[in-house]
Image 1 (tube, rainbow, N blue to C red):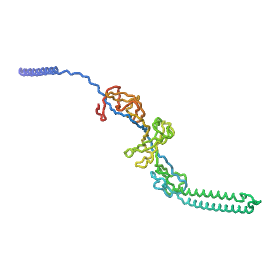
Image 2: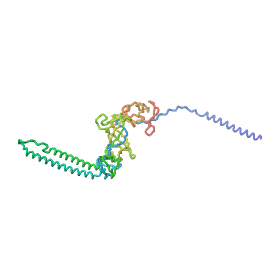
Image 3: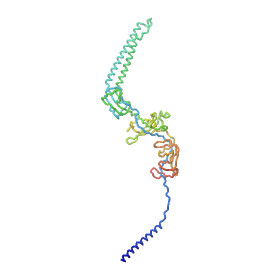
Image 4: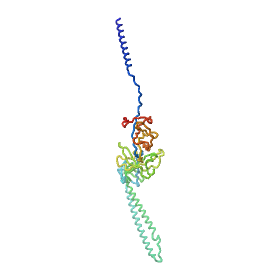
Length: 396
């Protein structure tokens, strides 16, 4: 029992010794550790994106959107009645035709008979007129025999004796019959309906065997020689380009480009400003400008009717201006520039033209100025910044 107790006391002493040695070692390590120096962390520098600018002559471009519509759209209407005996293959929805093509024929039999009858009446009237002239000549000759010129009985023959009324009636009858002949010729000619222009069939509702009457609409056609694009613009836009008959000056309408995306590709057609629709929209306070595009169907895909397009009207030339993104134009007609010491500066500028994509600055910027194009919530005039290159890396 005494031996077991001595063993416990020995083990407790060894543990106490190790604990003491560990405590002493820890104190030594803590006492030998160098004291950390406290340093103030520098404030981070704001990174900005910039573009270098250059002042140069710039053309003002007025942009808008509109829908393509035909310049000419008509209803195909017969001027005579009858049964349809022929319909062209092109007279179908979407069919294309050329000016002068036969689109439809109406049975001409009745009108040929009417023409033959009119020709006979003209010949009869010509014969009657000839008889009246012969009778008038015979009456004059008889009068001269009874009243020889130069004799005491000489006198001017009365109109009734010379059959003047009968002669005039015969002449009038001939003119009337000739008019009826001309009318019969027109009716026969109008049994053939021809295309009045190059175009496309928008809608048709006629077929062979159908009886049609004069004035009945058989189809709707529109011209493909010229199309128009109606673009609503604000009144302030009209100071930058010319509209014949609307803005001051006698020059031709401004040039325009019509853009549309078809078959996965952007296509461009050249056009011309030709007029306005003459009034301001009371609801939107916009004025409709009409752009004319010639021969829009000469290539494929065509500038089709009903297509929604973007329009760029070429306006006046500014002799010296700087073009910047519209997002770089700040409140109060200012822009942010970075000077040679990489400090951000607020610059007052004079805008010439502002549109949805860019701003033309006429005063306040010079060649080589670095304009900030990135947006930041809080900036101050004179703050230090870090300029990023186009790939997002640090340039300075």
